[in-house]
Image (cartoon, rainbow, N blue to C red; front, side, top):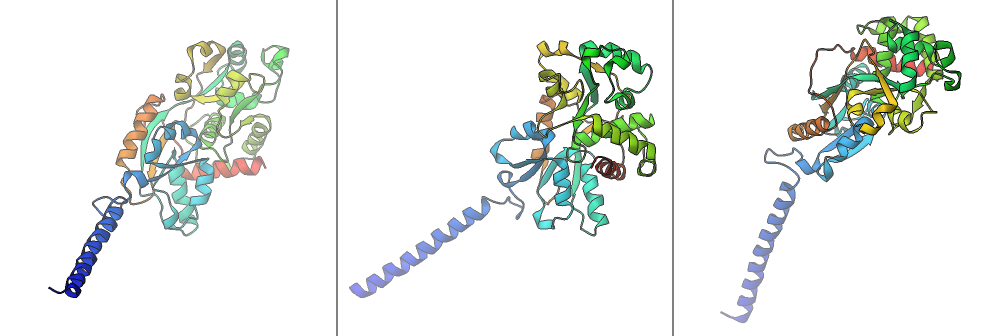
Length: 329
């Protein structure tokens, strides 16, 4: 074989080997981003929006999930007009925010966004106050619903309700109902107390001027805590800032034993339960994520899903959120 022909043969062999290497490299790159079904994101590429109430839980998921933490109201308003391609794979929030998203998109002509929504865990809202004031409030409220009673007394003096003058003003607190999922759920409990019923529809909310005045007074006299903190934390660390905190069974279970003597919890009824839900917003398989989130919530004091207690429709929550905005501009 001449040197010229031998050189040509070497070049041909090199081209074939190079093509094989390039094809294997491309195949490896493609398979690392999808599973065997084709097109479905792998575990490491899933995107999850976490409502701020679940920031600590989502931090426990690690780097395998691409997590964004933001207020539920922010997510709701953004995704309400988002194209299908801009939707995350999943949203961990409180019920009924995924259903609120669906109804809002339907009303404005957008396609359905929620492929499925699973209740992962539940907890009950609670009213908690500094221990030395519990007796005075209980005696003054009598048999009244504590949600409504606290709403009625907000901004008045403790001395007018069997307390001491140095306690000054009755200052309840909750998160912002316009932006935070738990804030809106807590507000729903206050309104359920106002009506003495957890069976509330949107229509009575819109047509009750007394309720509007009551909500305006509540908004004026309540301490709205900043996103990322809770009324209970503020109560235990800065009791002068507020003295009646809204919280829940799960959060109370995480309080150090040395702190429990500082507060008392009222048996407030009626109760609209807090339900953690994982909504799937894409074709991604979120089964593993569902199991991880459930385990982390259990460790955080949340209970197993049950549906013994009623909740309100997404229409009622949409109306209540708007009513809060309108009465507390």
